[in-house]
Length: 442
Image 1: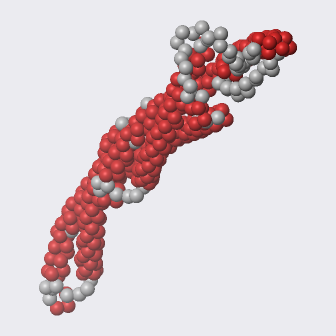
Image 2: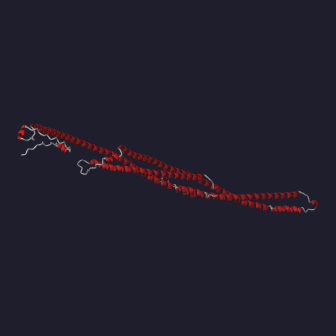
Image 3: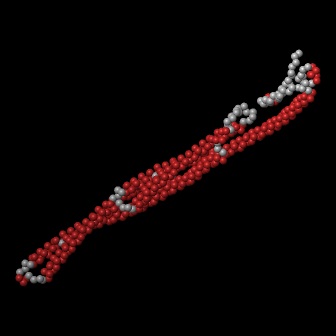
């Protein structure tokens, strides 16, 4: 056999290879020639006993080290596994508990939102009913306005001295002005109600959007809380944790809902105040209209009493005047007859004086018959003159009586016409005045 130089094999650490780290190749060790090898005539490649002991002691030591390291790692792994499992279970339990608390919080705020949504809905329906009442009340004022203006128009057709600005006209003018102011007030109040209805609907819509979001969030959190390690429908979502950076915090979340509820509460308070205001407006306007209507009716009644009384007095006076006219006509006839009756005695007396004036010479004296006849003529002339004067006065009186009769008849006709307007037209028309329920918008 040819002689060879045997070289010891290089030593590789398998752990270093497994870790991807190559150790340096140890230098080639050339064993020192022993006496046996010298005698044999070649160099021996065998280890020495010291190397052999050192080698297997190194292997034992390395194996012991690896054994203890493995046991340590196993203990640490077991501890880490148990701790991680406990931590994960605890964290998962905390997450489930937090989800439950979150569900309670969402349920509370959702209940609050629902309560205010219901309240706003009820308030809006109440305002819609008040709006309808205001519109009906506004329509109902057209009838009193038409009655008042018709009364004024009818009373403008009164005749002569009866066309007077009396208490009835003043009450009717007050009534017209009151109705106009009430109509303007009802229109302004209706506009306020319409505006508040719009604000309530906007607040309700905001709450409904928030409620809808919380409803979905509640369902998601409720579904999340039901997940467990045994749930078959769970999946991995690596990027889901990074999405949380873009969301709001709990404080802003709570503040957002509180702001919405505060706005809704303000609208509810405003609605409550407005409802009280509308009820008071309807009540006050109805009372004002009825009070003014009663005042106008009392003025009409008083005016009708005055007209009836004046007409009665005029008719009584007319009867007296007619009676006096008849008596005066008889008196005139009697005066004329009396004047006529004085013509014969006057002719007799004048004839006697004429004949006696024909007496001759000394017989033509102013004796007692002459004086008597002259006195008789003077008396008859004075009497006839007085009768003519009395006849003239009687005729003037009769003319005045006729004028009074005509004036009384005209005034009676005027009072009759005015009474017809006041009682038969105006007061009859005012019976159509709306009742309190209609004026209140019912």
